[in-house]
Image (cartoon, rainbow, N blue to C red; front, side, top):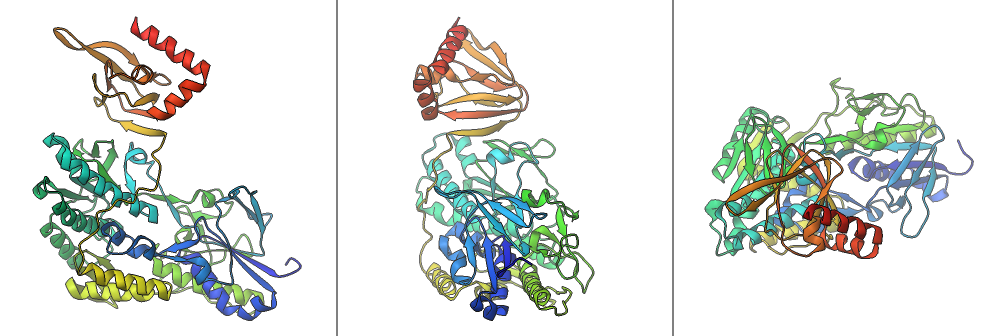
Amino acid sequence: MSPGPTRILILGGGFGGVYTALTLERLLRHDLRRGTVEIALVNRENYIVFQPMLPEVISGSIGLVDTISPIRRLCPNTNLYTRPIEKIDIQRKHIRTAAGLGTRPCELEYDHLVIALGNVTNLADLPGLAEHALPFKYLGDALTLRNRVIQTLEEAAIEPDPQVRRALLTFVVAGGGFSGVEVVAELNDFVRAVARNFRHLNTGDIRVILVHAGELIFPELPRSLAEYAQLLLSKRGVEVRLRTRLAGSTAEAALLEGGERIATRTLVSTVSSAPNPLVAVLPVKKERGRIVVDGHLAVPEYPGVWAIGDCAFVVDGGSGEPCPPTAQHAIRQARCLAENLVATLRGAPKTRFAFTALGKMASLGHRSAVGEIFGVQVSGFLAWWLWRTIYLMKLPGLDRKIRVATDWTLDLILPPDIVQLATEKPLAIRREHFEPNETIFREGDLGNSLYIILDGEVEITRDVPGQSDVPLARLGRGECFGEMGLVRQMPRSATVRTVTRVNVLAMDHYTFQALFAYLPPLRLFFEQLIQLRSN
């Protein structure tokens, strides 16, 4: 032990991290007052997201900030560091955080370390997903999806091309587990309700599609409940595509295994997650990318290091099975860990973690849900009422409970809001993915981006009198195109199509003009390139 107070450091502000801090504050309240123990928590945000209610942010049934609770209020005796973590050094017993606004990186030492970092979204496994699919895990993801839905409706209302309009009104969700089904249910209710505000839209053109690789959605629930949920979604207009696996994405389509393409501008992926990179590099034993802990939730190789939640491989002491990555397991693990940590400080016996899940519930939108509680199956309105009651009780903070209860009451009598909350600036430089034989831009289009090929090959063609699509050149990795329209501020002078799969960096008009104006070598390079290609 170090001289001075015993330092307990918690990494992660999800259910595992926050409930560990809550339990430690209760068990160590006298030690905290005397200053013999210090508790610190490091998290990128200063709030915890109550993820079971996150899909309702899409429809506006719950206010955006009502699904989150401030950690400082929940854990008033815990020192909070709202910084990204850069490095965990468990040999030297310290971690380093990134610098803040105008400040330096922070070095934090510890006597006991609790790792509760969870998993991270990973869309890199399939081509085009990282560039064009929308994840659904964090608060910002819910806001982004809501904004995308409203924007596509706005665009569809003024789009003269029926084919493009149908693509705008097609929404695809990949993943038939709890998250995917709850997202598609809320999205379907929301888009069909607010579409009535657009008098030039035909609601019959709206398609909401759920893509699932298994034989039945909700593999975690009994078959009868899964079949009930699937039938209910179908009656409400959701197309459930079973035994169908997502293969990739472009800006204009969801790609399915077997070659099928679904034209859409909105693809939501709820199926891809990966170990946190900070966890992946730790020199500890892992199973399926998760930290292996003993029955007391400690990391055997390093005394004083503990792990829980999605980033830990926890074997239930009762069933002998690995614990699923659910909130209720993370909360129970947090309480057990805190009790064992305190027992370690006081030289008392520790307890093995064992927990039997009380049940599983999932909302299906529009006052319906399914669930299994203490082995009893419930569905329909009763399940929906139970779902709301149980999760309202579990929501951290009395103020948040009151806010959510008010939101739900008003939602019964008021129409859904259709205001966009655009807070982010568009990316100046972005990645884009294209499949073979896709048109990146056409001759005559407005020139608004420069493209740099990361990998793949494109063909440049031009229409000439009496002929069409006359080949001009082929470009490959490291080459660029689209500069002529930006430099000369004129429509595209040629058409560019992909020959193979292509990944590009796209630079927007404003960024290009700033670089072109203030970097003479870059300006000279593009002027020479344009002259060469014009000859």
